[in-house]
Length: 152
Image 1: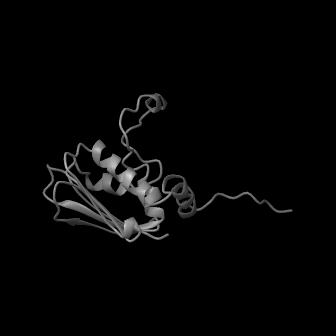
Image 2: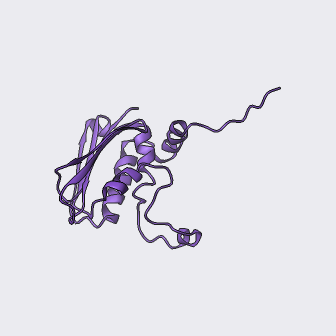
């Protein structure tokens, strides 16, 4: 009899994780709102279409992300909150900008636009079903705007 256990491809693992994090559109809104609060936003706009089934857009005026951080936030287990095991017991913030993003991107088309105050231009990333489609410099306001079109 041949071996039957195999490692799942990242795209499948991300979809399984998405099932744990993304139960319905409100779960996406919760995760993205927590990220905005943790980014220091003082203004957050929430735009939804058809109860979040067609479009969820969260726009914040938080600290924004660098080009590298914008890309890394879609990787599994990527976070700015943890550096060592003890950090797990000292988390005092809500979201893990990065922790849920891989799950959201596994089941959706996501456009992220982000810019830090010190940067001249921002970064725009488009990702669909965990697959990067593009990353370019863009003109955008300070903070982060995330548009999500959920597949389910």
